[in-house]
Each structure stands twice: as structure tokens, then as C-alpha cells.
Image 1 (cartoon, rainbow, N blue to C red):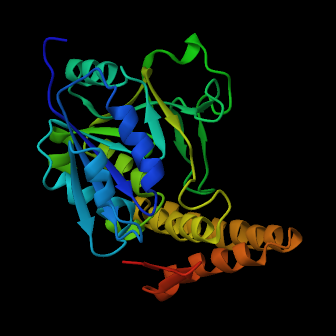
Image 2: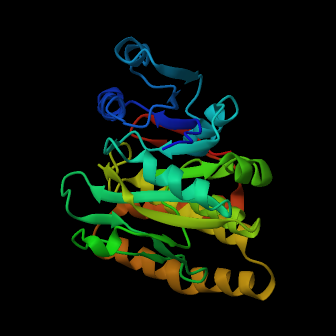
Length: 306
């Protein structure tokens, strides 16, 4: 590749030194050399300096508090010098040639603001987690991923426009970022990348999927697949996302749908499954939107809502 713009790779660590080290080790095999790597540590109980010792090429930024996914990424974006900013989860591992197809795609089409790699499950490396997305239904708060849980195949090796990027492997151009600004930090965890994608599209940029760029995702290492923390923030942020991205009659109908269909359905499901910890988290996620700021405590950890 004749033109190799600088890529700023950014990952957020929270009590995951071993998994982050595995991620960084995979980056050392990267065939695209014009990169800078930032690791943001969100006040881990572990000592993040160990990462700097093992991987001296990283730029380590230590936050005094656990400020969440969006705010953590924003810390690095503010000081990074790249032409593109690649937000990668620390629970991923990359193929050595994962960057070249992304750069070629974005350099060839300046209308693209964000591009995401193909995500395969690390534990099932022939199974797709993400190959594009059809978007979020504002009324149900749900969306459908393209290729989800399908076997990987040539069908998903191309490049195409899509509605939403995946936050585990999201590359945004400096041009688009300068126009729309940083990620919204009030989400703390979940939905921030979906909100960011909506802002990118509103600014007349496109979102694309790049099938030749492959990233393996271990998924839910930090929060747990069905943890109260995850349930709380998914519920809370679904409503925040709706409020920020709908107006007028659509906004009114979305809230009505949630309060009279989604909310009762969620309560009934958690009760029937005897998942009262998740029920409490679900309820608190809804109540936050009416009461404002609070502190959510889970398993001895404190997460501040902004």
C-alpha cells in the first residue's frame, strides 16, 4: 500500500490485564506498521504499568476513576494523532492483515465516516457475530445483525454500506470526528456507539462493513453475559438513546411502546425465570430516566452515571 496514513488504535482496560495483554500481543503481529496504540486504564484494581513493561510501544493513560467506555476512548482521542481512530475492545484479537482492507476502503471513499471489521466469535472462529447491521427499531429498541450466528463464508467477504457499526471494532475518520465531536459520555456503557453512528449519519457520512478485515471477539469478558450491570445499562441507555434520537410524535410513541409493552414484558420474563437480581437492575435502569443521577453498585464496584 503506497499511502499508509497513521492509525490510532485505542482500547479500554478495566481489571483485565491478562485479556488486554493477549489483545496487545495480537497487535504485535500486525502487518500494517504506521500505527500508534493507546491503552486507557479505567482505575483498575490491578497495576496497568505491567502492560507498559511487557509492551513498551503502547501509550498508557491511567484514569483516576472508572469513567466508562465512551469517556475512556475520548481520553485517547483527544491526544491521538492518527488520520483514523480505531476503537477496539480489549477482549478481541486481530488477524495480522486486518488493517490494510479498512484503510484501502476509507481512503478510496471519503464519504465513509465509520467502518467496522467482520467480527467472528473467538471460541467459534467460523461463526459470525457481526457482518453489518440493519439498524435499531426505535419503537422496540431492537435491531438485527447481518450474518449473526451464521457460518463464515465468501458471502460476507465484501464491502458494503450498513446502518450501524459494531463498537468492538469501529474505525472512524478524523474528518468525521472533527465534524460530529467525541462520543457521548452519559451512556457510560452500551449504546454509545449506536448513538455515535446516528450522529455520523446525520452529518452526511456513511457507515460501511469491511469483510476482509477480521477480528475475533471474546465478548462480555468484563460485564458477564447476563449480569445485573449489563441489564441495567442496556435498559437505561435504550431509553436515553431513544430520547436523543427521536422527536415529536415518534418520540411519544416510542415511550408509550416501552412503558406499556416492553416494560411489563421485561418484568414478567424476569419473574418467571426467578431472575430477581436482573429484575432489580432492569427496574433501576428505567427509573434512572425519571430520577436522573445515581450511583449503581454491583459486586463491590461503583459505577458513576454522568
